[in-house]
Every structure is written in structure tokens, then in C-alpha cells.
Image 1 (cartoon, rainbow, N blue to C red):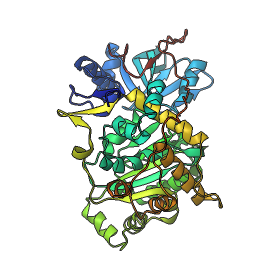
Image 2 (image 1 turned 90 degrees about the vertical axis):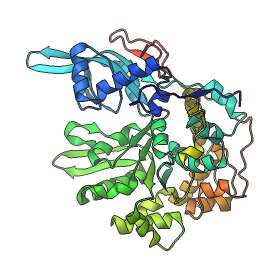
Image 3 (image 1 turned 180 degrees about the horizontal axis):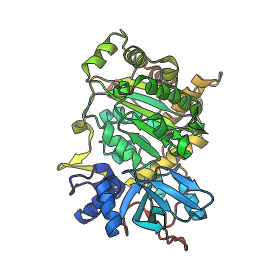
Length: 473
């Protein structure tokens, strides 16, 4: 493993997460202090006010924009709720907005108040778009030596062991959309199995959004009052954590969300019904990963009543009986489901040494994901060739993803995984051998990346690699 570009993580600032340190490659104390301050300036209202008053920079994730086509301006959303105006838009800026549907983009700027008589607003000064750097050359080289899922295990901080692979592969599936077919996965596991950490890292390596609680319909799809699209428009993968807390929404909102999710999962159509507030409707194929915890006693009682060991049957029973929601269409859209009452914990799967977790360099992980995504789209595999329809498309997309991840499984095993009768953890920890695809078949994949230091002559906008070089230093 001496050929692997690995990085170890030590957190010097207690309020930073591992995902933030890795995503921004802030490995030393000084970088972490500066990163923490800039993130807080965008997250906390009092810190935001201080940043405006003293001209301090802030960093926040670009989660969509509202464009004024008559004034050539755009309003950017900050985590603390205050809007920031970008007061000039040109083609370079529009390219970044479009890129935001394929890449995770962060914005660094200094907020300042503009006072034009009765019109006051906060303007983004010295704006920089921070986009994750990608090392395709190293990724291609490593893919000729290792299985893709082995490398991705290291990318997310896991050991290269069968137990790790059994937990990891279901989490990887919703990253991809072979031939634009979404791969929806639902995974119930005990706490402390790395779900939240995986989701946070995924946000910083892919076009993914991580919900830590059940979202509102306006946040997910959009708000017609402001002509604003929601999260489902801007991302390729959405992770819902704590899916077992679904019932926290009031009944009407829950049913509206449930209906919208099923339409979006099937057709890529995200739509809010016509009302006095108007209508929002658009298409975007999004793969969804639903996480849930199995420790809630009430939850386990419902699952045990299903009298089935099949994961899809158990989860369908749970949703139908506990939440009183229609389940058939939802389960039909899921390509893989698991309900694990016992599985390895993070202490057993994390790739740690001397108390520190070791990861594959994030720019290499991004490269691997891009290469696999391209291959899955261009080289679609067909396990079932004599029929057509949703189920056939799902199975073939499922098969395509597993094959390009490095697995070589027979049709019987694929169908058992798809139907919910076995799990990947069963597969990797059993005596059954998991074969890998042959090596040396990976072709180089090119991708367009903004050049470091490229500038817009009007706005002096800088496009930085997502490693904080020149950003926090």
C-alpha cells in the first residue's frame, strides 16, 4: 500500500468535523482555525453581523441561487438566513452556477452593506468559488492495481476488510445513475456504524446533500413564492439521515412529502401541487440514500411483527404500520434494502493508526468517483435482456453499478440482493467468494475543471481548488 496517497487527520479545532477538515484539506492548526472562523461567520447570525461590520471573510456552500435577469444580479443563500447579492453576472459566473448541479461548490467572500437610499442590501465582495480538485491521473493508475470499492473504502476512512465492504457498498450505490436510472437504497443499522460521517464526507466529494432531519417540501422541491428551486434541483445524490424519525412531521406535511418523494424517485419529476402560492416543477434524476437507526424499541416492535426476515418486507411493514403511509410504490423504487440489528461499529471499520483515521487523498477519491460514474453511463450492463420495464431497468442498473465497483456476482446472488433476502454484509462475511473485475481495463477520463487562478476581469472572481491554498493562508 506504499503507492497509495494517504492522509491522516488530526483535529486541532474542536468544533470542526472530520469531513470539513478533509474536504478543505485543512491539516494544520492555523488552517483549521481560519476555516472554522469563516464557516462560523456564515452559520451564526451574530458572527455574520460581525463579519459585515469588520469586513471579515466567510465560507458557505452554494445551495442554489435566485437570479434577477433584469438587473444581472444573483442572490446567494447563506446558512444563517441572510441573503448575499452578487451584483454582476457574466458567462463565467453562469458556468459555475450550472456546475453546481454536478459539483459541490463553496463560496468565499466578504459581505458588505450597500446603501442606495431606500434600497439596502448585502453585497459579496472579493468572491471566490471553491471547487473540489480532482486527480484523475493518480485515480486511473490506482484503479489498475486495486478494486474500485477497495479504494473507495480508504476514501471514506474504512479499513480494506470484508466487514467494511459489507457496510460501504450499499452506501456507494446512490452516488451513481447508470444510464440516468436512479439507485435508491434504504439502510437501517445500529448507531455508531459511520452513517453520519459517510454522509458528511460524501457532501465534500460529490454532488450530494445531507439532510440530518426530515426536510420541508419547500426546502426539498422549492418555493414558488420566491421562484426558488430546492435541493432536489441542484444535487445528484440526497442522503436522508434518521429516516426512522419520519413521523415527526405533522400529518398533512408528511403525506405531501411522501407523495413528492415517490414521484421524484420514479420519474425524476419534482413537483409541488398548484395552489395560491403557485407551482414548482422540474426534472432531475436524483438517487436517494435513506438511513435509519434500529435501536428504537417501538421501531423494533413494528419490525418484529412483520414475521419476515426479508429486509424489503420488514421495512415495508414498518412504514405501513408505524407511519400509516402507502408503501408498495416506495419499496418498488428501492433497488436495495437492509435492516441490520448487528453489524460492525466504527471502531471496527475505521482505518485508524495511533488514534488517527487515515484517508485516501480526497482529490484522488473524487477522481475515482468521476471515472466510475463515466464508465457506468457509457458501459451499461444488462443482466436481464429478455424483458423491459422499471424492474428490469433497476436490476440492470444495479448490476452495472456493482460490476464497475469491482464485483463479479452471478445472477442468483444479484437477485437475492435486489429482492432483500440477503445483504452485502452477509455476502462479504460468508464463505462465498466475491470476485473482482479484471484489471488494466480503465481508460483515462477527462474532465473540465476550472483553472486555479482564473479570474473574471469584472468581478475579480477567483476559482480555487478545494484545498484552501490561498484561501485560509
